[in-house]
Amino acid sequence: MSTRTSAFALAAFALSTAAHAQWIAERTPNIPRLADGKPNLAAPAPRTAEGKPDFSGLWIATPDPAYLMNIASDLEPADVQPWAEQKATERMNAYGKDDPAAIGCQPFGPRHIFGTMLNEAARTKIVQTPTLILVLHEDLAYRQIFLDGRKLPKVSNPAFMGFSVGHWEGEELVVDSEGFNEASWLDFGGHPHSDALHITERYRRVDFGHIQRRIAITDPKVFSKPITISSDLDLVPDTELLEYVCTETPRERYELTGPAEPVHVAPEILAKYVGQYEFEGRNPFRYRTMTLTLIDGQLFADFNGKGHVLMAPISDTMFSPRILGTFEFVTDANGAVSYVMAHSIAASFKILPRRDLQP
Image 1 (tube, rainbow, N blue to C red):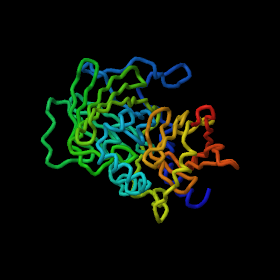
Image 2 (cartoon, rainbow, N blue to C red):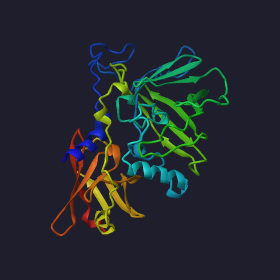
Image 3 (cartoon, rainbow, N blue to C red):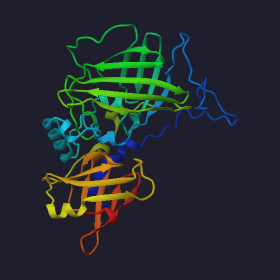
């Protein structure tokens, strides 16, 4: 890769390079174990002294990767207000350089709640008491979920993580959050939110190692329909949170510099890239297919049949869907795509065109 391409790939995947080495000699207490000493994650879910499901533990979210870049992946384009879609497109065409979390070291806000993270902040620790649940993140962000019967406040000072209250519906914990400030993005694709954002989470601990979680997102100023996503939680045993401080991270890890002038790729070149592709082997995002379409002169990608992510051009052959790496189109002597190389600091992998499905 060229120096500039390397800078893009480094910025895209630097967030995914956490190493949880501390506490490896300490086993998490009160975890049921198999005969070989490994945690029995299929054991029955624990309960509190009050008989409620106990969500305490260290967890990592497992949402569909499409929501990392586009939280509205399940909506039709017409369900997103034009001003909001235009804002997301502008932010992607700027390669995400203005992301307040990655560049300004501000809290990720709702992205923490959705679990659409790729970095050291991906792990979440839940501490449950009868009247309060604390949710702790490795980047020092936190949430307080009050279970004491109070209602959501009338917010005069919005917060990055909003304000949350919860209640029980049988075995299910229901959490409502609002009062978010508008500084944060909803996803790494740059979708904005308004002061009307409301998030409802439903938690159900199905066994010792797994929490089923459904999240409903409503923001009538941005989306004409509610968004519902699954973002289940998997237990992370025998380790602990590690402090991750953005301001202490080398700045070059987040340097999202792009071409000095906007890059415009001719429509006839973009048209050659349209079609469906298959990933060869394993990749960090669990993607199998990539479908490229041309909309209003710009190239968009759907991964595993969903996503709708702008492929911001770096050159005629190199495109950046931001945290998904840099994608380089390799063509044959006739100009047809032979394959696509996706570059990251973790690995490079090949994506092959489906010749039978090419237009």
